[in-house]
Image (cartoon, rainbow, N blue to C red; front, side, top):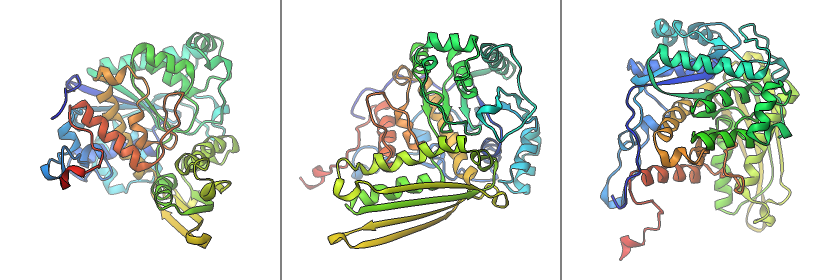
Length: 441
């Protein structure tokens, strides 16, 4: 240990996890955590449960598990709840989602059946292809926000919780741009009272959580937290937030491959990506307005990683196209095809082709777990909580939030280094730079 440890409260008591959207991702996460608690399956893909962190020099051979290094809440302390436009309990929702096999779902059936979603805040113009009846009614959007706050407080009291996290696992809303109602907290609250059409349901959830001092993570590409009004509220109440759009599937592959091309200075003429998927996410994205929200998130990745303005010979004017096709027979088992036209020494052309047959919710569930535990760590750490945006959690997102004057970091490997160095900083350990000259003195 080379520095002073940052103050972090111990994770005493139960941690409530409230989820807007109790569909495939949420039920895969909840059922998975319960299966892991019962020792029926391992937590594959979770950095908080299986990841290690190197401390000091390579020769020191200090490589503890992350969960043993920083004070994270234990899995046994997690209590689940949420909202959905469909009234199915978590067991029925998991069966309908079709992600997990029946044997595993039935092994935790008793637990899942007890989790019933509260009526959701929903307005169909924001998610046009979904129709549900488990929906709140209110005179204004402020009344809806107040109902959510009441839900949260009742849930906390009922389960005798010490702390809470709200994490968005619901569908992608239509594309929105920042409007005057989003520019300040005062304008936003006036907009809630007047039911402004520019305030989406996800923003109402985020407002309710932040107003109560509860951290919020946005797992979809919606315009939600990333408006000045909600950033003002997060900073005012010293609440950690992060987002947006879980980095799974095709974009995960892009943030692995693109840094490799750039590191070896291989040029790119074009990158064509197409997907087929048949889950509720695919149904929602079949609407052009929702697809545009997702497209914006997916397209931004390569520009930031490859930096065409810095490497014009290699990356100026490369062609990037993304397609998502709704194909019901495939269910949650998404298939993503990528074709890369690259060039190397003396400009000679080459190609890379990727066919990733992935399971979207299986990739997303461990991210949800990590974000819940790391956001809870942040809310117990005043140095992190006061920042609002937790940029060190960029590792988990396609469109990571960052300070207004910064560009987001998309390189998966830089993101992981940032995350681990943040943890080292919190515990007073030396930051790892990989310089390594001292080994040769």
